[in-house]
Amino acid sequence: MKKILLIATGGTIASRDTEEGLTPELTSEELLQCIPEVQQYCCVDTVQLFNLDSTNMRPEHWLAVARLIRERYEAYDGFVITHGTDTMAYAAATLYYLIQNSPKPVVLTGSQVSIHARDTDARENLRGAILYAASDSGCGVHLVFDNKVICANRARKTRTRSFNAFSSIDYPEVAYIRDGEVRTYIQEEYPGPVRFYDTLDSKVCVIKLIPGMDPDIFDFVAERFHAVIIESFGVGGVPCYDNEEFSRRIGKLLESHVKVIFTTQVAHEGSHMALYRVGLGIKKKYELLESFTMTTEAVVAKVEWALGQAADDEEFRRLFLTPVGNDWL
Image 1 (cartoon, rainbow, N blue to C red):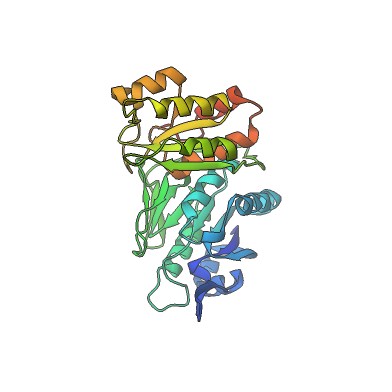
Image 2 (image 1 turned 120 degrees about the horizontal axis):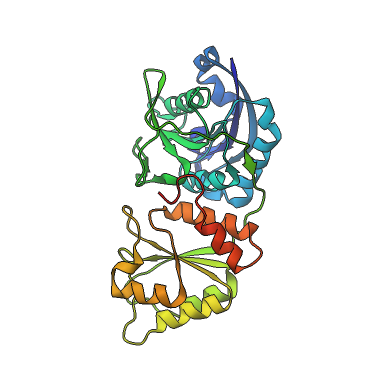
């Protein structure tokens, strides 16, 4: 029988209704007690690492999750992390880069309604996550929600209240949970050895372009951040407004060794800056990095990870452009 470690960090799944609104209070043991049937097919131990609303989760917490998994890696066959849904896509993407090439499954899940509520998705999601973590096909870092197994760097929260809250962006779900079974559609292979990382640089910001935006915002970025991810229009359009100020300010960022990465604010089909004149010129001029079909959450995670490993601009560029799993597919 496989051994699974359940790591609880809080979130809606562990919340109680208080006078100040839903607040994470349930322990990892209490979560497990709500689905006793899973003990029929695996042995589950629990750890209460945090008990936070995911709005308050940040990179230092995900580094702690990765450290815990690293410490317990040899003792368990799989790992399940319960997490609030609001930042779970960021958590999943970050762990995707912190824990690479793992033949053992690392699975994130949560819920839209507390596990103590009558009409909740929590028990099904937690049961499904443990089932996938204990399956023979489980490997790598994934998010399980609404019976879908989603590659961690492709997950995005696309609904605020519905049970089918997460979507896999421009990549198929790798498996589904049906009738207590894992039905695998993409057979992934992570032969190991697993590689853990323990450094992130979170001095990263995301700027979403809007029509008429003042390029002075980039002066603020240059003083405070090590990298900026720009969500551009369409496939990668950058305004010039007849004065080329956007281009000039982006050039100044690069001169100051601030990394600049372009993505798109459109949910599907990715960026392609070279398609239009409004993107091609600036990309060629500065040899700009772009993320193509990566989600913004995954770009943030990879940039923070690459900044944490890179000694200089060229090393950062190499790390960002080197595929990790399916991030460039």
